[in-house]
Figure (spheres, rainbow, N blue to C red):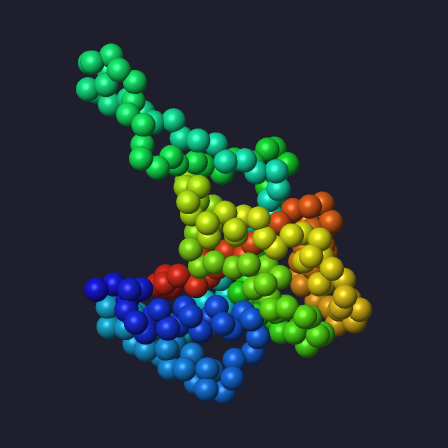
Length: 220
């Protein structure tokens, strides 16, 4: 069994996603420490490597995808060899698949290390933001830039459409003391400026934690 499919790793992933939305309680922090220790032990057993997995995760990069003006384009089914021989069109699929397409200016990306994502999240919470970080910027630990989507996948379509950029922009602009708190932290300053610029220009933003949080054995 792979480590990633084990219950302890799934618990670690759950706690990490909770961590993005605010500082963990003492009980949750203890569970996180236990999960990290257990994963480190399993990595050592399976791969013969001693790692500081907390540090390894916190130093990895989170991708922020900004997009607008996307379209869903239908996959055209390919003809099989038998279709060619019998000179007939390709069979129609039971459920039609689509892929997500952006125009030339419809997609932008920014990155931030996971520990800085936590720092920004905690800072926004301390400033009194009236939503969680994941409500402001929806997050996923599943690779976001999917190749195909079905029209019956309501969760995917919902994620593409919400929250509205103006709503997210208003949540940040309500924090009157934010700029003073960011003084001296150029990385977070640049990130907040980028987010506001994206939302002002009607981009929606989603955070992709796949690289940061999925199991990866650090190289020596």
